[in-house]
Every structure is written in structure tokens, then in C-alpha cells.
Amino acid sequence: MSSWQSTVTRHFQRAATTYANVSELQQASMNDLLAECRAQGLVLELGAGQCHLASAIAARLEVSSLVALDISEAMLRTAPPQAKVSRVVASALAIPLIDHSVDAIVSHFALHWCLAPAAVAAEMHRVIRRDGHVQLAIPLAGSLAPLHGEQGDGALLLPLNEWQQAFASRADSASPIPSSAWACEHDAVKTYTRHFHTASKWLSYLRAMGVTAKPKSQQSQSPQSGLAGKQGYQYLIKRLEQAAEPAGIPFTFKVWHAQFRAL
Picture 1 (cartoon, rainbow, N blue to C red):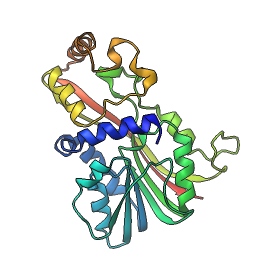
Picture 2 (picture 1 turned 120 degrees about the horizontal axis):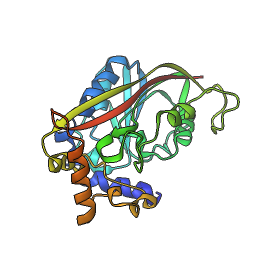
Picture 3 (picture 1 turned 30 degrees about the vertical axis):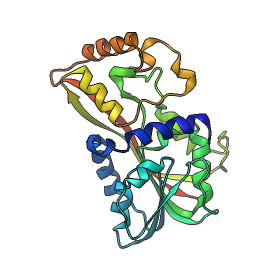
Picture 4 (picture 1 turned 120 degrees about the vertical axis):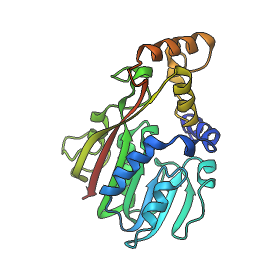
């Protein structure tokens, strides 16, 4: 496991007991994914977390079984047992399944923690059968704008074009997957927002979701780069207060919802 993967794992181990109580934005996005999802047969979920999505999909008659994969054992342990769901602790960059062994892949609010979109797309293509369907929901740069700005400066989240390029079906693509590996059947960017009356509550919500992890390359940047230290904290409070709207300080996710078919 890389140092970055270890960092992400630690953050979500700590957030395992609080995440479910602060996930209404993710729930709204998950409902949209479920409405569009065509998964059937043997399904793989990447970044299953507490298995809310896994349980909903496994309950469908057309789904025979589901592999819930997550890098955090603590998150998976919080999930209640489900007859058709098996839980696996592993990374989306090294899926412990044989080639072309699953009928469908789903992932919701998870792949943005992988810093190599093309490598993730290649690993997904390795394990899915031909004509298998992939359903994704990935937060994008521009989310959490009061913290990082509209362009996501200093944020972990990647812009839309990097994810689209990772799944591009062009002969001149630099992706490690073969040309014409994916057919995009649908994609759209959707926005999910709630407001907070104080900056401290905004930051508490952020921490409870476990999304404050940063690669070492970003940890020593300007005060706004992290939540540690008095100066950095005061900077964040000021920036959040300046972003306030009549309804409060916006906490917004911009999410890429995409559906692909493996070729």
C-alpha cells in the first residue's frame, strides 16, 4: 500500500463512526445513481464504504451477488450483513479478481481518492466482461468552492476532463487501456448543496466525512492547504465567512455521473 493509500485509509478509519450521520448529500447523489443503474449478475462496487449502495443494488432480483471493495476495513465493518454481499479490503488500483470476471461495476463518491484516473480505468476494464456496464459518480474540482475556489486550486479533486480522458475511446489516447475500450452511454455533472450558518459547523461537517486527507505534496503549501494550525484555521474561517450566501455558507459537491459499456 502506498503512503497516500495509507493516509486515506487512516482518515476513513477515523470517520467510520460519523460518516453515516453526515452523508445526506451523498445519499441524494446515490439515489440519482440508483435510478440510472443497470447493474446485473455479479457486480463489483469500488469504494463501498458502509455498503449503503451495495445493499440497495444487491436487493435487486437481477443481481446474483456483489463484491463490496474498500480500502478501509473499519468502514466495511460498520455495514450490516447482507446475504448477497461479500466484503473485500483492497484498492481500486489492484482489484483482487481475475480478468473479465464481473458483469458490472459501480462506484459512488470513491474514485476521486485515486490520483491516477487512467490506471483506475485500466484496472476496471481488466476485471469487467465485454459489454459489462459501469456506473460512476465522482466528485470534481469546483466542489467545496469556499475552501478551494471554483477551479479547485490546491484541492485533491480532479477536473472533469481528466476523468473523461481516462475513459476516452480514441486511438491516440495516452491511456494504458486499449483504444475503443469504453463506450460512453450517458454522462452529466450534477450539483448537490446544503448550507451552514457558521464556518465552524461547515468545517465540522467536512471532518466528519473524512475528506480532509491530502497528499504530502500539498501538506506544506499555503495556510489554506490544511486544517491544522491556528493561522491556517483562522484563514479558513475568514474565507468561509466571505463565501456566505443568504441561506448560509454553501457546502457543494459537483459530481460527474457517467455510464459506460466495456468494449
